[in-house]
Amino acid sequence: MNAAAYLLATGDSGATALECGAHSMSYGELRDAVARAAGAWRERGLKQGERVLVFAPDSIAWVIAYLGTIWAGGVAVGLNSRLFERELSLVLAESGARFIWCNKSSCALLEPLLANIADPPQLVNDEQWNSDLGAVLPAPAAQSADDEEALWVYTSGTTGVPKAVRHAQRGVIASADFARDILGLGAQDRIYASSKMFFAYALGNSLCAGLRLGATVILDSEWPTAESVAAVVERHRPTVLFSVPTLYLKMLQAGVAARIAAAGVTRYGSAGEAMPAAVRRAWREATGVAPVSGYGASETIVLVFYSDDETALLKPSPRLEYRMRETGDLAAPQRLWLRHPSIALGYWQRPEAERDSFSNGSFSPGDLFRRRDDGMLELCGRDDDMLKISGQWVSVLDVEQALLGAIAGCVEGLAAVGFDNAEGLVSIALFAVAAPGQETEARERMEAGIAALPKLKRPRLVKWVSELPLSATGKLQRRKLKEQHLGGVA
Image 1 (tube, rainbow, N blue to C red):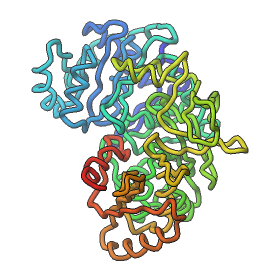
Image 2: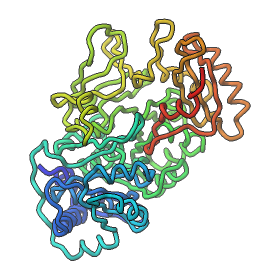
Image 3: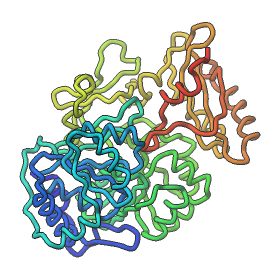
Image 4: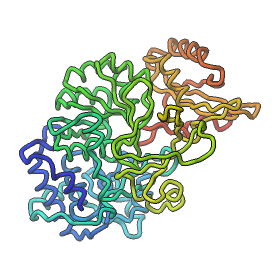
């Protein structure tokens, strides 16, 4: 099969496939452009299985270069265009890529970094690329085995150095399941993800799902803010919005949620981190519709669990099979083994991590889950998000959820982590970012919220900070937070 051809096989030729700013492209035009891009890659010497790094802000040209790589038989690797120099240097050195597709400003950043690599990839800038496409004939889609590589997704690096996740051609077979079967989307819909396309969440649930459904996918070249998301929605009128909890909160604080609903969005998806119950309730009150909260990973591309009610308990997405990884105390939080068509092949040059997370076609995320007596699953966070306090398990996510409900509207960020107190026992430290002009009220409501918690869940240390460390995809970096603020604390 060919993953790019599979995604583009459905859309009606005259229907709009992509919109970005003032530009749009129909499915017929997109299929032709992707086939021409494949021809351009082959003329440049791209061989089956060789990697192409796509390093630029989202655009229609980005999609053509990316899908054209897969159509040609190459392996497409979307990169965060805001990667720090250290992470970018690491990716350039370890990926073994043949080419880097980029825009003019990105070329200026890349050239000095490539000078330090023995066999550097060749730069292809978008201006040169556009002239190439007009001079080549459309190429037939390369055919590969289902389990041959089609694309890589880099992890966010929340637990250390980003890892390249190797995905197979078959990884897109179930790309539309969640959008179609859970959200009820179809060819008539217009899909917009505030996250960028290098992020598995947007790549799988907006671009791949949207194209396979024959829907319209809306792109934005700018980095998202509350106001910019509202502006894109008002201009392009999507029917569904995929975003992340942090941005949903910022949109509520900026007062743009009602504008987004008035512009025609009728369904909302959330992922990337747990959706606080208070944010979910506030969004429903502002728009009339609560977001469906999903759980996925760079290793799954699609959302494999979801919650569509107030309980936040997880339900399996279509085609997912799962089992607890450990045996013994079933009441204790445990890792899972997941089996699904979108599960990755493994990691690039990370044998130890691959042995821990992949086995016989299954994937085990680092997050912990607890199975309740009724069979439903609770997400408990990662290993270091679960604390044993006075002999009982306490989830820092539960602490955050409870306190966000008490101080909603007064903070822009909140994070709880574990630390060893002066007695050598595990305690909870809380870090919060007050909303501008809300510092006094935030502190007062925080004190009241902590006092209302069960004793086991009460933070022993509260610090007000100017910002929380986030990864390139907007995920909280708890390890870095502890390093920055708890290095000498006891």
